Length: 606
Image (cartoon, rainbow, N blue to C red; front, side, top):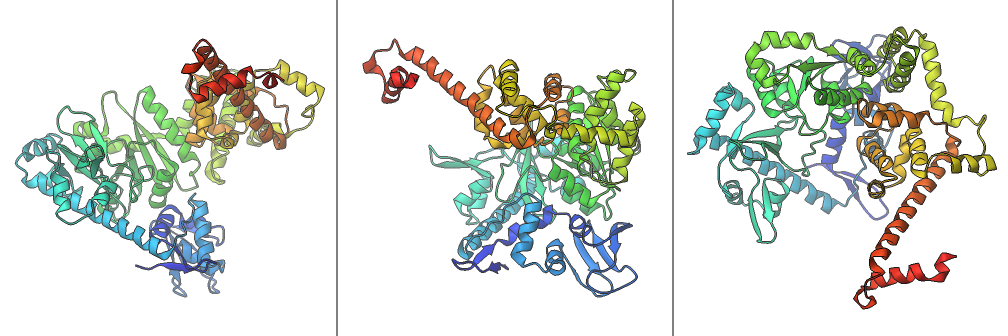
């Protein structure tokens, strides 16, 4: 295995090769090269004049699918990492750090010995998972109780061929079947546990299989390596589906079930359909729709979207047609908007009541199902229909509200023709010129920075406004919704504490939602709560005039939240004191005695 060394005052430092693989799997080579070389879409690839030799006819080709560049003139080639090193004359470590920062990763720098051990453990975990997959496949073929599993698959219309393509397997009844098999291969016990395939009972110092009496769906990376499993119970047991835990080789927030199989079945993918379940993916492939993938029990993430758009120009999302399905679809739309560069498209397929992709394709067949895909709701149509659903678009108020809701979201779209067309569509609905909408949106974003008619902090007018205005929690909320990134000033634990305070519960919940869902703009925040009970309160908070300049807002927010936390802590202590005051002093523990002393010390009242 190759390692990359850099000089360090304490000796040789190593960047693990698996980290470099991780970075390159997340980065989009087109986004790295295009700001430095003028590229034009030509078929599946991008082309331009080679930056490494003089030419008049473009011979420099960039493949988004393969994440690779090649010049037919001078034969240079490589990855995004090599391009930065060659084009920018960057040192290796600097190039890695630049790419890692771009995808939100921190470069792990460790000594050679530790890195070698990490790589060895990862390699062994891959071996464990590979052997586990082979074991489950064999049990589906040969175990004495296989008939229940085989019968289940046949009842779902699945053939032996499709079961082989997806490496479907069977975990038989019993507590130690897989563990005994893997232990006989001399795998270390702690690595069997770390792989997620066996569970440790520390109290009894025993281990047992995680998956028992389930249909097994191996989750494979783009290289075809098994990285995790999903298991569907046979019968009525709980949980219905059980997934592998996160491990050194599996991160469910970025992986997609069926992506390896989709690429294997289609030499040139042009679109991918995102569904909710493993069985949906397999059933669709059985009936000829071999380009679907499923998220692994999580909402669609930005990493999912970025990964798919590197491979295909179109994504079709499949959701139930009920309110819960449309809410999930809206969240997927918000994540997709920020990736909607020109040349990309997204659609939303809302299923009939009581159907999922598995049942629907078995009833209708491939041709009718694909006709549904062709007629699926385009992103722009779903975007505007969802925002307009609670508005009176015949009134000026409705049109103004639509503009206020839509423009922050449209601002998140990458610059290009699609963004302009979306703004033009909004202009058509509101009767305002696109330039006026953009101007109004800019003024809205700059409202907090305007000093005109704003009393300075500390002035009598300011102090009067704060004392007569909303409570501290409402004040903190109004600042937060204007600049959601302020939520990063405190840890989740602080907001969890405030959620326990009836006076600050709503503020705490909104702050946590911003942090957990990365709703770092007013538009994304409103979009996330569209159709929910919190929506009107948020909109009201956003309409409040801010008295502070943006440069002062951060410190004021920190001070306000700190005061809320201090007051809540004092309130808790007072309540505890009331409970302790009638308790005999001899029965109090040292902390309780100190609390009584602190709250009865005359100096504490000064």
